[in-house]
Every structure is written in structure tokens, then in C-alpha cells.
View 1 (cartoon, rainbow, N blue to C red):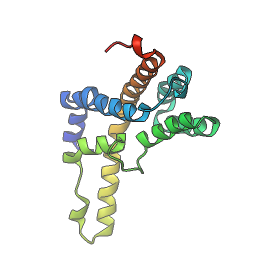
View 2 (view 1 turned 90 degrees about the horizontal axis):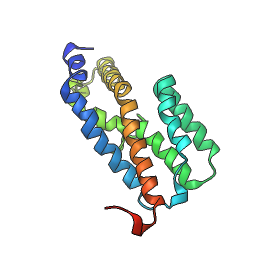
View 3 (view 1 turned 30 degrees about the vertical axis):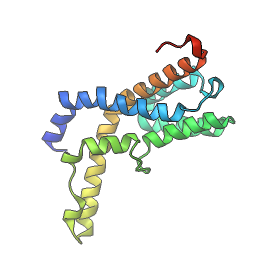
View 4 (view 1 turned 45 degrees about the vertical axis):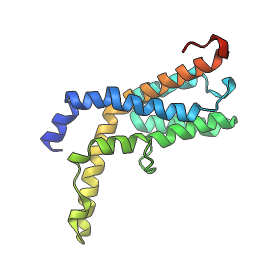
Length: 171
């Protein structure tokens, strides 16, 4: 990896991206997910706490295994929707504007090589694509735990807010 890229991953600007942009991104995604949830539709806090534990023990691969296991295990459709949502958030294959991959890719745009510049040279284009993928994956491994912390914290907040009857809610 190039030195400018590595320096950026350790910079205040990247940490601001982690603390502000990704937090806002996670909160918006959770609010969209939970917009029409009832109190019984939220997953349990123990399931929520399993997310950071999985990341700490085995990174993105362990989180993917947890998500797959939870999707197969849950019979409640709203809870399956949550685990599908989590899968989409960390997926590299779904290029939705609201997934972590695209947020990181957009943030790193100035450090990624233009694949089109390779023209018809397929080996060069594949090399550029692989270099870009490695840069994005490297950044995701740095931000995944923080992003999921933002996401699960806001999800727990929404669940708690939803469990309070409307007159008791604080604005």
C-alpha cells in the first residue's frame, strides 16, 4: 500500500470520518430499518451484544458467520430483516449507497486507481481492481468494529425508545 494511503488511515480526517460520517450513516440506516417496528420486532440485546464479540474474535469473517447463523435460526420475519440488513451493511457485493463498503469506497476515492485508465489491458485492469479492493478491505477492517458499535448503539436506542409508551417519550 502506498504511504499517502497509510498516512490517511492514521489521520485526524479519517478518524473524523469514523466518528462523524460513519456514525451519521449508521444512525440513518438504523432509523430507516426500524421506522415501522413495534416493540416486539427488535432483536434481543444478547443478539446485539454478539456482534462486537464476533468482530473482536474473528473480524468480518466471524461477523458474517454470526449473521448467517442468526438468519437461519430466527423465525420472526422482522428479526430476519435485521440480520439481512446487517449482511447488506457489511457486504462487498451489494453496491447500495447505504452499505459500509460504499461509504468507505466513497471516502477513499482519491486513493483508488481508475480502472478505466487501463483501457483494453485486462491484466492491468484486474491488477488495479485488486489493488483497490485491498485498500477498501484494509480500511473496512479498521472501521468495522466502530461502525458496528455506532449501528448497534443506535439500534438499542431505537428499541428502548420504542418500548416506552408515547406519552412518556422525551423529545
